[in-house]
Image: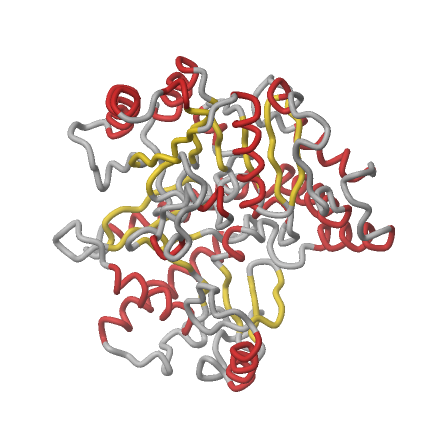
Length: 453
């Protein structure tokens, strides 16, 4: 039986004490939204230091793909740690080789053979992808998409444009990046019914003709489903059109699957929904179930052009992180990818049924357990930014961990093991939280304090 959600006014006394200690010694730059201080977790449940239970539908920003402390992942980590913790990528070891084999077996690029470069994070994987694209093409320009998030180091930061806060104070980042709109039929920027085709036309017939010569473009970097920018799914045919455009001009296509990869969308990789094969793919987040690991996966014909020493990484292929990734891929492929598709479809149905009676919901979109619910001012298409922020915070007070994205979208990225019962519980909390906000109920008096008991 599940324990009640909230036992203390949030944040509780132990949480407040730890937050005060943090303020004295830790950078204030972290973008924290509400005062959740974690003690431990299991599956899709987490507890704070004051004993309050929460349902986790953020999963460490889509990182905890197999949930918290999955026994197979913990066992793999323990066994690896008992062997050795580090050897560096100057040498070889079984788990690093096996992870490379495991990725190749999953056929991220169809029948094209692939090679993997191993690092620690999403931003490092993007940096590696950019370096590889420059190296093999001899070109220096890139195209990215407005609303994209690709990391915070200076190369990836040049592409990141989901919030100006991320670039403020750091200009100039890497030069040579031009942004174009990510096609969004709910908030169209171009004339015409097909935003995908309009974006492709703009790149080829406006941008290439007047500002960015195609012959100078090394690669186009895109999230096959956009994360921080609003959990957007591109229109049908757009990614295929982008692939064709790149082929016409000798441009490499890079898919950033840091947030969408490893079963999140109900397929192992989001690219598989469209049957579009990129030249390079970046992975991280859910790959290690919480352990820091990233991959640059590229067609063999491109990555084998790198010469010895062209790129390296001290911690790349760390044995403990590789062990976690291998175990994660095994359990996701065996059961959680299908679960993400099945439970995700149920979740989308629940949200769309709510949308039919809730005027503040403008659009529900997503695939698998990569789901966005965009809130609007009733009767308009205007983003309801404050409502979105308030709803995420109120849900925390009622025992549900969420994050927002885009202008006014609540994003749902729970562990891939969640059940329909978890979805029902989350919907109860979410709907009650919105009702509380409208009724002016103080957060200290949660209506759903005993939900899930």
